[in-house]
Image 1 (tube, rainbow, N blue to C red):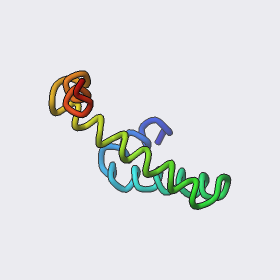
Image 2: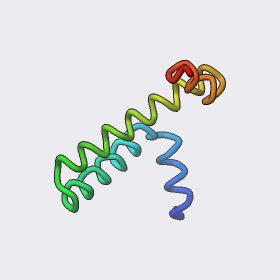
Image 3: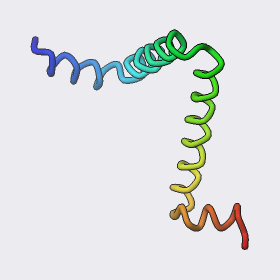
Length: 72
């Protein structure tokens, strides 16, 4: 089996496990390089950024979302 086929199979059949492993790997590497608290802070910023982006997508426009938060 070629690498591309194996990766495609894993992604199609075990997507959640693959994402979990990738996220765990990045968190482990960042923790080893930066330390726990800096990594934790970066993780919180990523989660908040995701939530803001998701909310903007649901409302249809980032501009409309920001206008609701920051009325002039």
